[in-house]
Image (cartoon, rainbow, N blue to C red; front, top):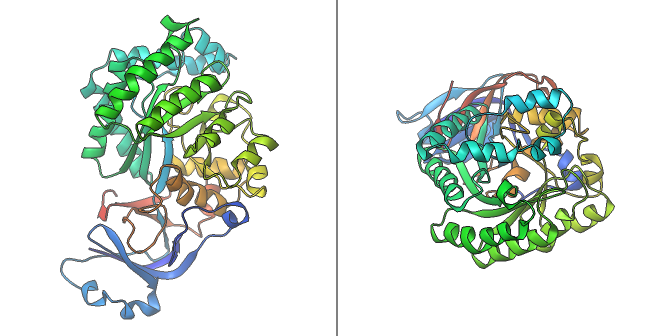
Length: 420
């Protein structure tokens, strides 16, 4: 049991937590000043004002020998980040391509030369499952220490039935051996392998007829994804894959409109995708389709930052009434960082989002985008006790403002202190 006392600000704390927040509601944030929070059996049992702490139904347990008391004077407590789009199971790194980018080559030009995703696929195919696990475990620990408590991890660097299965088994192993809440997404349609150039539909056949049934048979994925964009998979390809996934109970989460107006957003909405991600190219029609759809628009500003691309129109989307989530896109080629504190800063600096909006985007809306909003993403009684305590900072606005600094002092995951 843990009792956190004298909390300067308890952020995202509500008696009834919404499933998501949208439009103008994204600029409001429930905050409790001078607060306490009590954790028992891995869940949030109670919270409130310090002046009412003696009225808590758990007050008799607060001073017990089994309760650890933490004084958070001058500090904030926030729910852990929910990073709903990552690719952190990969082999090696791609800093040589980073140099190519500096010299002026585009993401697509590098991909056409056999780099990009195909480069990562080649490395992964040569790497053992144990080695992949150890590499990914280091990244899991890294993001956890920076405040992430829930993460979605995609396959997609295998591009063969055996190697996609290998990746998904690594993700399952991470689920079983780490304290984070993890959701797994099958992304066999991440890129077209070089040997299928000119016969893309043959590769889609393998995804549909071989990979998806095998993934479903082993219960390795929670969701299915497709890179529906210029130079990757078409709307028709995407529809085939999503329909095949639906037969096995795999809901879609789509890479869409990163490189062009691809129709990926509309396809995602049509197939009731949980989220559509990237969205650098989003216009009036895309926004109209997303309104009241139940599909979460998820922005990945780290990728646009790293690749030097235009950013998605976050302000236009929010002002139209949409919800917005933000995720890191942690991967070796276009966003080699899982630092959600920096993602918040990019949201404010580059997307012109308010601090309240970015906090909602990386907590409750991020939780919705990976289907875990019922158990995490906010401070609410009965939710999993995933949260972090900041250093002494003036307020929550300081987190995105002071970019590059680590403001997380203590991490609590599933009711246990795991760091610092």
